[in-house]
Amino acid sequence: MKIKNSIYSRRKFLNGLLGGGLGSLAVILISPIIKFVFPPYKEPDQVNLPLADYKDMAPGAIKNFAWGLKPGFIKAKSDGTMTAYVGVCTHLDCNVAWQPDKKKFFCACHDGWYDENGKNIAGPPPKPLRELQVAVEGEELIVSRPGAV
Image (cartoon, rainbow, N blue to C red; front, side, top):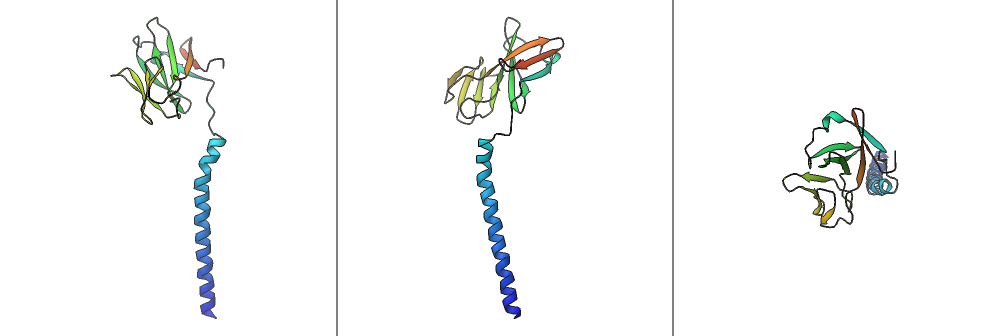
């Protein structure tokens, strides 16, 4: 009688182990699909930045800032105004990096390149970087989506 109970309990344990493993595999495979269909992130309408960090930028200089959970870049223009870009590639949403020695934005995912004005110049990106509006209010730099504010 003891032998049957120990076999039964081993079988029950192995079935539980197999079921748990298959359940975990299902969660691992299905969760990216759920995140794609129902994205958990909502992009901000605007970001307020301290003007002191950006007002002394030389014309053509580019600085990083956080656009919600995504990177952003602010560029000082020669006329004293500023423009901003979302630092995400328009091909597959990979982050882009500013390469000051080449004066270009680079997406390492698929070798995409953008010029200093955000225009796509090489690789698979189909569109330029998304441009954001920049306004100065008091001691704050307001970066916002076009038409959001």
